[in-house]
Amino acid sequence: METASDTVRAARSPLVNGPLGCFPPEPIRYLGSLMVRNAIRRKEQAEDHSYRPRRLDVRLARFAAAAGKVDKA
Image (cartoon, rainbow, N blue to C red; front, top):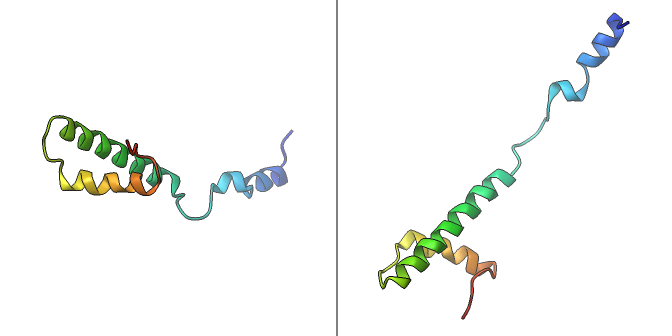
């Protein structure tokens, strides 16, 4: 049987309070990686169809080049 002291101890558990601290950067990095990946796709598609790619797509694609993720062929 659960006593009052067990209930108080459970209420003070770190699991009840949840995480304390800053928002982790991983979700932001994930969204940023999606933006860069899609910019690369749009830029390459524009180049394949002999169109001029949008400036934003060119700038975002540079992030992948800086990370060494772009084909250099």
